Length: 304
Length: 310
Image 1 (cartoon, rainbow over the protein chains, first blue to last red):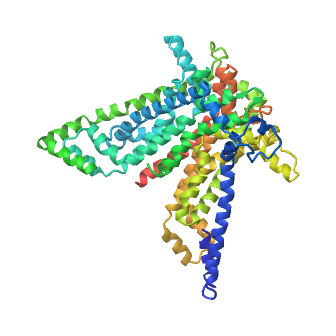
Image 2: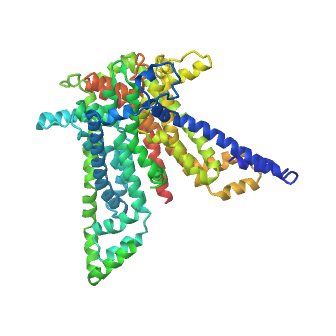
Image 3: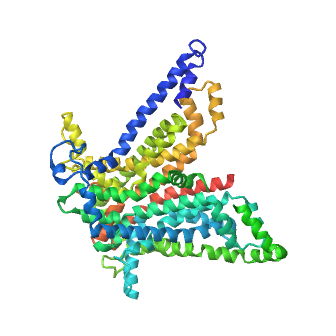
């Protein structure tokens, strides 16, 4: 944008001193880098501070020394957490929940997206819009009625859903399925009609068309949707906080916040280690599959 | 890959082409319905039904044995805390969305400005706050804001500035929750705007340059109109998410000091789950509906318009 400025303002004088345009462009670039560095510091300070604190002992944290520097780096916090049975249970619960939710989400949303984008039937267009609208209903509106529904279900059937880690597997798909279906509709719609028409004429069933043509062709979209479903289910905080209480049933975010923060005794080194380990899976996926991650983010608004 | 699949299928199914096509077409709507059935069941049972059930719950007495009509709502209207929550929710959402949109816009331009081979790296770095689970990153902020060991206050102390009660004082606490929300949400705006900036055809800028447009004119008449759709949908989406936010306030202040930082979601949790008054909690959370419906109508209009264009 700034280079346009320089071009516009220099349009008349450019013939006189040719070098100034280049000069201004250079300065625009320098300012851009300067502000990017400022914003990068703002955006990266908390995660870096997490890392700094996680490498300290409680004694070092309690001293009045520079909090931004580690005098005696130690991995004690990591070792302590990674050998703690409680913490490993949180990790296991989170991993199980996320994997099951991702599988369930894909099994529900991919066929639905295929049906809605290719097999036009009565009300399919309205339904597609309706699905997007359900994505806009936030979990903060639903947790109280869901809580009561589960209590009523327990009274009727004697099956207790509350306070079990797998309650998350039941409720998380409401957060992931609508958006995943929506972006898969977008990806499927971009596949040329000739492909599936040819397959159908050649005698393929609809199921074969989906599994042999649509899924392979729309694989990037599928990966983006999978990443979305995983990050959402890993990060979800409200539902497990409301529906689970026993320590062995908690998932990572809730477990770290409810068990590591005890009354007035804050062991910040350990809390930051826990937070960093809790943030690690999404961060690692992001580091390796950044382009898919960003494609999934922007797909909601630019596709469909 | 797909082409080979089609070819291999064609060798097996060519003799009965017409009849199989007809059969497939006949059963199309049945199959389509079956394929969407799990989705429909999920949405009806776990989204639509609870939404309606919330309205029913909100009309019951605390022990849920008696119908009280609008009793819960009238009770809320008389409570000072409720009006404080309404006020804080609006301040929180409007301020946070505004600054997220502005910062996202500015940062997107800076990233767009630099040579394209460095853009990926910067974009990747600047999106990190959005990737970390909000509950986890808010913990880092909680520690940065710690009353006795705040690392920010340590820096301020180096310049001889008195420590700031980040989460202790009502106004600073409100500032802090908004700051954390901006920190988490601005990268999302940045990514969306960057995608929008990339989609503006270069010819438009060239035309503006030839016409001698100033920087402001180019921004106002070329960039902004071209980005209008994405800006609108991102702001609306973010308004919904910010208005319904729970994680940040819950972890950072738990609504303290003196309930001054509660938003609808955290207060509904406090009243409904922790306080055991489910009907009142449901009534509180229902107050989010008007704002959400308002945003949803605009998003629907946008989708309808795009559907017409296509």
